[in-house]
Every structure is written in structure tokens, then in C-alpha cells.
Amino acid sequence: MDKQFKQLKEEYLAIPIPDELDTIVNNALKFKPKKAFSYKKWTAAIAAAAVILFAASVNISPAFAEKLADIPIIGKIVEVITFTEIKKETENNSSLDIQTPAIEGLENEELANSLNAKYEEESKQLYAEYEAYLASLKEGENANTAIISGYEVLTDNDIILSIRRFTEIIQASGAIKNQYDTIDKQLEVLITLKSLFKDDTYIEVISEEIKRQMLQQIQQDTNNMYWVNDEDPEKFTRISSDQSFYINQDGKLVITFNEYEVAPGYMGAVEFVIPTKVIKEILVGERYIN
Image (cartoon, rainbow, N blue to C red):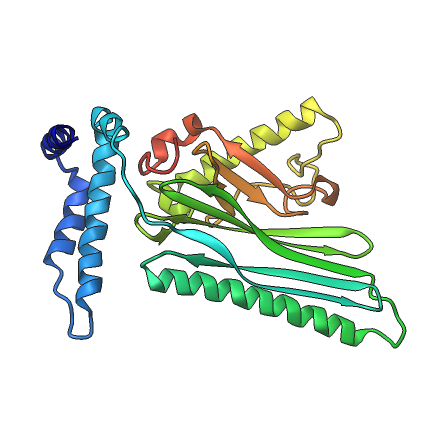
């Protein structure tokens, strides 16, 4: 094992540092903390720079990455847990089940606290709306309402944690709303759609691919319907710069839409897996998408 590490170290040191990482690494090394900035945070900045350089080395040298895969490494655990769960049923035919997720294991407390506070606030708001609706009913009037809110871990590997948060409201019919967060567990940052690409051309490239898939699905099955034709009053033209997305277990980018955003309600929430070959040239790197 020692010999294997020694050889790996020599190969790692032989890999040239990419120009675009020079600034990141040098700034981290030259960083002088203010009085209120703790030594722990300063060392975290150095560690983050090292992780970025390490990740770039893996991308630059396939041989290095292949040998690295054979070496057992114990990593930290970043996970999603159920922080709280609220369940309620009433005599006038209403029910509520809200699960609030929480991120655990991040050293980046600012990120963890921000996400967890957002999740908690969403649950509080949903509960308040439920109570307000019940209060608006006349005495003896049935609510005929069920609200289910929870989460699902879509991807959890050495690098990525992708979470779907959903809220389903069932009355005369059902409606579901999805929200997504994708985290780099090693660098401890929230991944945005924009951050994956070199420039804003991704909006047009992805939009055209989604239109292609929509038309293909319609052609394959006439029951499929998307607002993609010129005669559609709410015709889909392009994604937003912060369009909902996640990265799946296969390392593919998945663009998502809630009900009624690009299709009639009976189509439900829809998603499109974007082939990597379509976006490969405009990706910042291969760390997340492959």
C-alpha cells in the first residue's frame, strides 16, 4: 500500500496545474484572516482550494483517476434526515403530513443552516396555509383536503447529494409541486444550473434539446401533449437561467418542470434527461456531468 501511495503521489505532483485554478489556489494560500475569522475557517479555505486542485487533477489525468479508484478512502458523511414530522387529521375530512428534511454532516455551517432554515420555513408556511383554509370553512363543512409534503434523495454518491422536496395537495383533484437542491458534498457548495456551464449559451442549447424531446414524445404517443407548437398560447420557448434541475445517479443532467408549466395537468410534473453529448462542449468540467 505504501508503494502504491508513493507512486500515486509522484504522478499527482507531475500533473500541471491548470491556468484557471492558479488564481483560486493562490488566493486561498495568501488569504489573511481578519481578527474575527477563526483559524478553523482559514484552514477550511486552504482545504477547499486543495480539493478543487485535486478534482482538476482527476479530470486532467485519466491514469491518475484510474489508480486512485483502487485506493480505499474513508470520506465524511453528509446526509439528509427527517428533522420534524407533523401529522394531523380532522373530523371534517382533512389530513396533513409534513416531513421537514435537514442536511447533516456539512462543515460549511452557513450552507447547512441556510438550507435547513429554508426547509423549515417552507413547512411552517404550508402548515399556516392549511390552518387558514380550515378556519375559512363554515361550521360542519367538509374540508375534503389532504396535504402530503416530504422529500426524496435522488442521488447520493461520493460527490453529489440531490434532493427532491415535494408537496401534494389533494382536493377534487391532485396537484404536486417539486423543488430541488443539489450539493457538492466535498466542496460543500450548492450547485446551480448556471455554475455548470461556461456561459449563458446553455439556456438555448438545453431549450432546443427539450423541444426536440417534446416533439419526439408526441410523435411516439399521441396521448403525450406539450405546449411546444406555434398555435399553443402558452408555448414553451426556453428554460429560465435558474431552471429546476438535478443530477441523477448516472451523472446526467435532468431538467424538471412542475405541473402546467410546459404541458396540461394530466401530464403531471415532467422531466427531461439531457444527453451529455449535447452539452459537453459548454460544460465547465466533468466533475458532475458525464
